[in-house]
Each structure stands twice: as structure tokens, then as C-alpha cells.
Image (cartoon, rainbow, N blue to C red; front, top):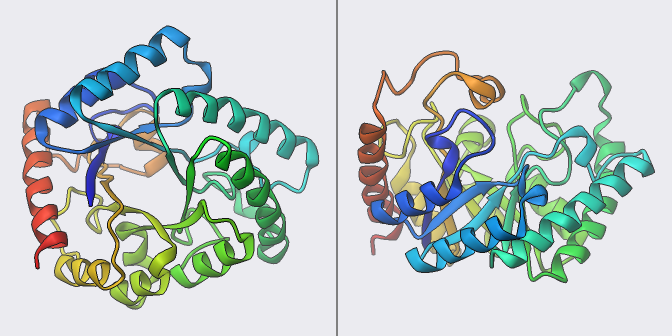
Length: 289
């Protein structure tokens, strides 16, 4: 397994100085830094080159996380929105290729956060499958795997369980389109987290970790031993990226609905130490024999 962390653990906006966080992730012992997808298409060639060099020099693999905006919804019924979304993704994939980044995860089949006043699951599923086939074929040209994140009912309506994720990915039918699971969302929707992981099986392409209250692994009540056993049973050896959100404020705090300072005023140094300890805990719980 490669263990990583999402940059927004430290940040309050959906964009940051990723060079800083590549170095921080390496210093803390991580293998992977997950960066935000929103700004990538607008980065200069020079900055992309600098970012790639920093990742190479520090032995860090870059993955990309993205909650698509309404205008980037490849599952839209409006063909003009879909066309514009695919054009944006193409530019983003070009940047990812330059970064040697080969995995993007998130609600790529839809948009986030969803306006639930106008949803039709059956119709949205159909358009999303069609859109993901187009997006998956495009991503394959750049050797990029797409992880379709299964979200809780309060954030999306199309994929809420591992079973739905498997059905959807099987319907898309592309080798580089995979299921992505997240312990926070599974804690809400699944009757059994270990069964959900086993249901995803060989289709699991990316895995997010965090406690039920979105703190770092080890500071809550998630059944980590059970999770580790299930991942081993399916032979998962991919990326495991922790995605804690503990600071209120900014666009991140607003979108993730962090209405209190879960970190209890932790300094950046204290956040770093929590991340380091969580990494040790996660490696032990998910990789013990």
C-alpha cells in the first residue's frame, strides 16, 4: 500500500502551495500527497515543472481529488455542459500527465455539492454512465485511473453504497474506471464496512480514510482492524489517503460543514504531529499480518 494525505487537512481553501505540502508529506513519512483538481488546468508550465521536480526529489506520488462543479458535470443531461466538462477534464489530464499523476478520485460521475431539488436517480444514473464512458476513454489516453467515490446520501444521490458503486462501474465497463470508497461515507451508509470493501473487491481503485467525525485515523471509533482485514482479503495494495477535516472556516469548512474547531486550536506543528501519529496507526492497522 501507498499511504497519503489530502492537502486540505491543513488548508481552508480548495487551492494551496502544493510544493510546501509535498515537502511536509515527505517529512512526515507519507508516500502520497493528494492535491485539489480545481486549479490544475490553469497552472503555468513553469509551476507544473517545479511541482513535478519537487515530488520527484522528495519521493512523493501525486494523486488528485476533485468534487466537480456544476459546469464540470460529465453526467449532465445538457450536452453543452457535458461538452464543456470534457474539455476542462482534457486540460486537467494534460497537466496530470506532466505531473506524473495517474489517479483522480471524487464524485467524477456527477457534481458536488448536489442541488437535490432537481434530481432523478434513474435518469441521472443513465446520463452519468454515458458521461463516464467518455471521460474514462479520455483518461486512458493519459494512463489515468478514475476513482468514482461512493458518497453519503447528504452529498450525492447516485452512488451511496459499495454495491451501487460496483454496479455503476461494471456498467461503464472500462478498466481504468474504478470504485472509490471512503470510511467516513461508509460509516453513514453501510450496514457492514468490511462487507462493503469485500463487495468492491478487485474493482476498488482508491481508498480514503478518516474517522466518523472526520478526524485523523485513530482519534475516533472506526473499526480499523475490521477494515484492515477486509482490505487484505481482497488483496488491495493501492493508495490509501487519509482525508481529515478538522478546521472550520474558509470555503473548505463551509463545503464540508465543519462548524466547530475540531482541532481545538491546534497549531500547524500540532497538526503535523497528529498526522504523523495517524500514519503510524494506519500503517499498523491496515498492514499487520
